[in-house]
Amino acid sequence: MRFMSYAAAATLAAAFSVTTAQAADISGAGATFPYPIYAKWADTYKKDTGNGLNYQSIGSGGGIKQIQAKTVTFGATDKPLDEKALNEGGLIQFPMVIGGIVPVINLEGIKPGEIVIDGPTLAKIFMGEIAKWDDPAIKKLNEKVTLPSTAIAVVHRSDGSGTTFNFTNYLVKVSPEWKEKVGSDAAVEWPVGIGAKGNEGVANNVKQTKGAIGYVEYAYAKQNNLTFADMINKDGKRVSPETKSFQTAAATADWKSVSGFALILTDQAGADSWPITAATFILMHKEPADAAASALALKFFDWAYKNGDKAAEELDYIPMPDGVVELVEAEWAKIKDSSGKPLFTAMN
Image 1 (cartoon, rainbow, N blue to C red):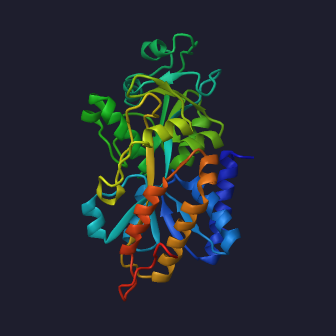
Image 2 (image 1 turned 30 degrees about the vertical axis):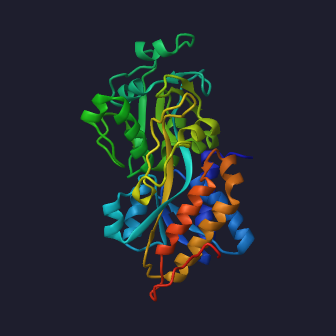
Image 3 (image 1 turned 180 degrees about the vertical axis):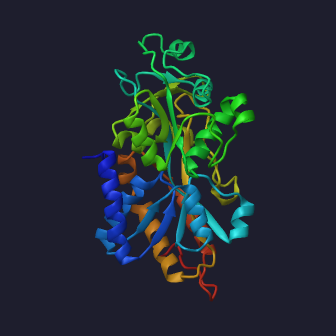
């Protein structure tokens, strides 16, 4: 099957970690947002090259901590580090894929994409100001849908999360009240709701809780057969989460404009743009303690850029454009061994 259930995904994650840990070829940890595609790539790469990948899907905060502590070869985060943090850590940062973050709900009788939510209403829901599904604000957006008087159960991340960073970054842009009272970060003081670890945990909690609403990377919604909501974007248009709307949001991204490729793609203009679109990033040391392991990791990422587009698209991620890949691989020249020799060149 193209998409996995939550239980199947968890089983795969356990098996994936055990089998590849024995080979111990490449070690990484961090964001849960890209886990489905990293697992897919790793499986194919193992068959193609014999080299394995041990990736711990522990959240962006954990990934940043582990790469800073030099306990993994690479860290993964959906909250990009700024230039100061990169310089202080002796790190480089580059994007791997782009995806969409979607509101997911558990509401009896409601099908995927049947209801629509705008940004201000979403903010009020996650602040606890809208507490029932038949609230007038939701009904006004969904006049043709019969909404039950069911209590809304908010589910959010409990761990340091790049998905949370991008979700709250969007809410800051569309809700002055959210900006003032909650703000945006990988972890925030949530006004209401229950916490769950990882995209996996949020997906599972929403699936098990009647009246729930949460936010996950789109692949998790599909894998777990969750009901998602359409959204009203910056141009005032109703859009569905799909490849086209993610691509439109990312189309005008100027990756040269910021240090460390640290672009935020939320609330982009465009009639077809999905409003909560995000890139996911890799962090590596410029002077790694284990040069051989870092060289292997760069070969994997190069392989993924060159051979992984189809798998990414099948999971509704957006591959990085060729021009961005060229910029990234030029940046890799900064990763060197103890003699000052780059671990990767474009001819590798």
